[in-house]
Length: 124
Image 1 (cartoon, rainbow, N blue to C red):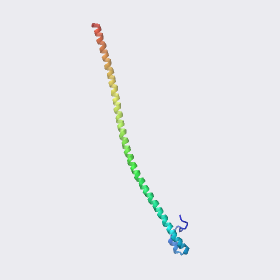
Image 2: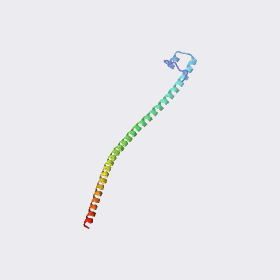
Image 3: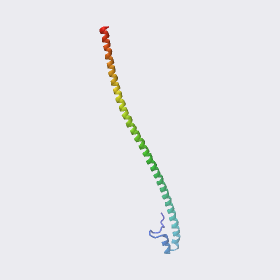
Image 4: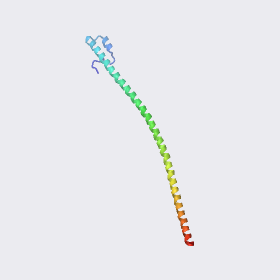
């Protein structure tokens, strides 16, 4: 920032109107140039900041959409896992039932085989 700036509350034109002298007239032109350069620099910074904020806002929106998509996929996977878990539970239950039935049939088969052996041994 420049040390030759007018005091706040006074514009450069107010200082010139009072006729402070020739030396101040030269500084007023220099102050105006420095002020214009500073305003231009701040304007550039503001434009850069606005552009950056716009880019960040866009990235945020894209990220939010991606999060929504991923959450939907996660819900679908959770639903699928729950369904498959239920199916697995049913399959295991059916397997236990079939194994029990097989064991019962095996026992019955051996009982019948023993009866046949006893019959042939008794009458054979």
